[in-house]
Length: 511
Image (cartoon, rainbow, N blue to C red):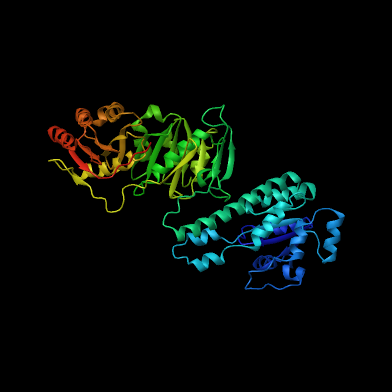
């Protein structure tokens, strides 16, 4: 077998090439790939040695040569073999190519058009497409994630199987299609201030799910990138395969907990609704406070933490049944104890970044796109609109409740308070057609804890009834956007009840 290697991303290149050599595969490589293989003491023939033609145009032309492309495109026929012999070429059986990192280059803040153009790959795309077209004989690898698959096939069969070649060819065409789309989107963006008129998506399947929301619905998880990463960009450490519903709950929990950066924080989600959110000086204290908000709903829920899970936090879980836990890390002691929970999935997240900058939702015959809500815009000014102003303690709780409310389904109502330095929700209501019912739900969940708590509302109060319900429950301060035609009635109700109220001027619906 002969393999042609020309890669920009050299992740695991040396190990893969060594595996090929161990199975008597002859290596041919271009430019920097050849240098990297020689540095690893691997036998390799350069493209120039094969074609007897030097690189020209500062490397723009390296592999665009009849000896290379005929070797890839040749079919296993006597006529094609005769043509190869005429030009002194041989068959190439494996093409390992990935492209110049155009997407990464244009994502840089000060990239120039000239830099972008130079990072448009020509020869690599031609090699990938040629090999994919001839997948009946040639295997094409454009993703380092597939190196192990190819080596296993060669070890088992002595060649790459047709089934694997078909899968790799489809992946290769998807790769070049996404690459061309990225170039188009970049050029469209620099020519127009509105580049959203055409939205092209290329998604890569991470895993096929057992089923969707219900067992009779088929489902799969896709990623925006083809990197070797797991669900939501994380790494599954233990437990059963994540389900469709698990992934939705994990996404909701992680988006929420990632917004709390000042202290260790915990968010508990059940059926896409937060049932407890808390921040404290330690993660165990944060969990206990979040759990106390709604212990009934927390059973069978998903937990997300913005700090590494340690043994003390696991001990705080007690015997609570937990479906999944997402965190940026787990200590060895925590992992050892969590291993006893065979059905509990653990997802290690790489960071607290929420990517990409936009989110998509499907609707009938179309897709909605919007920017991710990352909280109040810069320079947002809160203002007190009642006769009574909130205390410093109330302000801390109001700020916490305001952030928490942004992750509750509208009409979102959050009751929260600070106790011994721990900020926590004590009652959450959301997802109802009217706001006053959400206040009643939050009050019922909070019970006695509502007395002395603060309240956040993701949107304005259309009537004063919600304020009166809050006052009856014992709420002492409220934060809301304002902007209702009945704002004066709402403010008057707050003044009558002796409640401090602030307007933010920003709405945070989450439908």
